[in-house]
Length: 232
Image 1: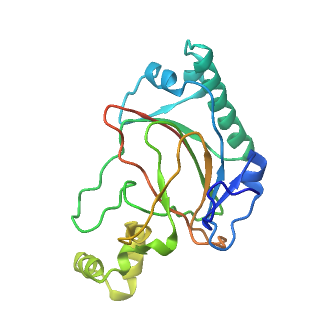
Image 2 (image 1 turned 180 degrees about the vertical axis):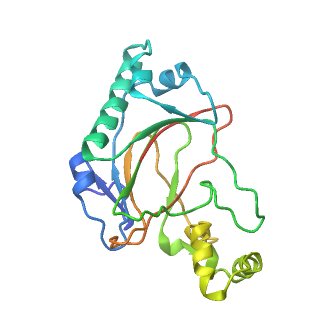
């Protein structure tokens, strides 16, 4: 297995979908990248789609209905194929046209929205798959370069001030409100951008997981530009 991200122990690089789903996470490696240089005009698809809300789910029939140029058609076939591969694998992929995600502005000392570095958690064994076809792409960061926000003394103190239950249930309070999923990056941290066209598999926090979950975040969108993102 070649490694396009040379010297990075967190990321493994594969060259096919079967490799992507069958390669095991191990050690520090909690992100796998099917590295691709895609042809096709994904911008043409984005400009023809209608955004109804900040996040609009795009269905295969929506794509099929578009009148596209040759390059636009190539892009469409790539997306439809990715959706089919993931569906056949047993996943439930969603193609989203994104203006922006909802912001969490309830507290000034901790954020729990997707723009904050966070991990995904699931009660069952699963992984997060994502591919950005157009627009700004997500970032990941090594677990050694970030700290769980609930462990930072000043943040933990403020969370305890919010909580009014018995001390032994404070941990449940943190989990129920997703505070424990969010991370603060170190000052010298170097986030890695996931780029366009690559299909990624990221480790999720679940009972059978053998590696640390992958810390990631949604990007700040480029002004006046929608994102086209496959995720499941």
